Image (cartoon, rainbow, N blue to C red; front, top):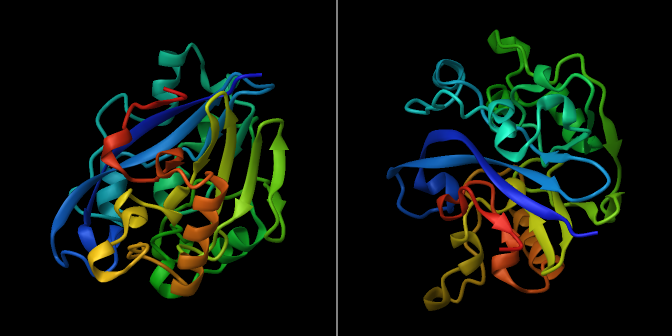
Length: 256
């Protein structure tokens, strides 16, 4: 069995550089891709995350300046891979923030997987995360409302399907997971927002910083622990880590 990973960009989020890399270039605006991932070649067709929403919703509830072009929603892009939404058997969520969970009504029969701690926090987030999870208290309806999930527990790596496993990498959110995919070129790690861009992993050698952590987190200590764990699972090869918002890998395919 030879698994292949495809990076699918579902739109562009208006954000700030210091959300991607902590304490770097405060106030500098950037446009960052909202990536999700299609894994093919295995027993089932698998998505990791489902990306962002349409322009109107993104600007109303989330980040001003965000944009999703016609045809960029995840279900609209599947035909490029010879698939339709009904062909997706399983969706693994790295976490349940708004830009990773949209268009779930397009996949009514897919099995959904996330970590138990993420589900619990999404159901009752603290006020500063109401918008991140589109909590009903702000007037939104989260895409995952009314859906059943298979909830993973603990921090040990767990096989989801042959060649695909998930492991606990909290910090960006209380229940973030990363997904390891075994390919002909070795393991790749879909890191969600535990790694937003490769700058997080390059660090700053001049300042003796192994990593530059992400700028949006619930626990900075967990952020550093998760970065270590992700790099270890990727065999120490930075290029085998797939960040959640890095523009250099839009449209990429692995193994290359």
